[in-house]
Image: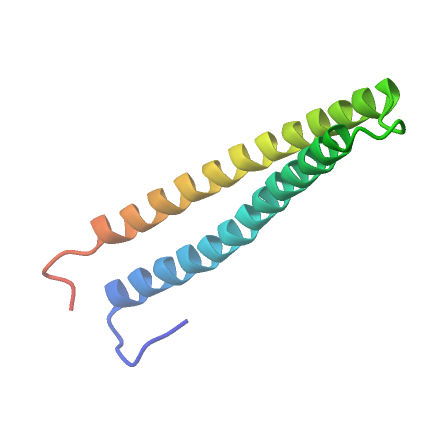
Length: 108
């Protein structure tokens, strides 16, 4: 990536900012996975509650235990996704901090 200047310091700052921006977008996509996992958990919990509240005979112990097991798996995935997303955003913050610290008033 280049700008219209030939200043090496400016080029370095722009390159680092561009790389940080690309990584920030990747973090956004990772956060969508976390949201999808959370939504899947909520949907499964809602379905189970509706089944329980309806009083239908088809809401067996096996269905309840199966639903809870599925929700546990979804929750574990959501937790892992959230940790990964948090780590990515922390890395983004560090990248942008380094860009900001690399810039000073003497940079053309």
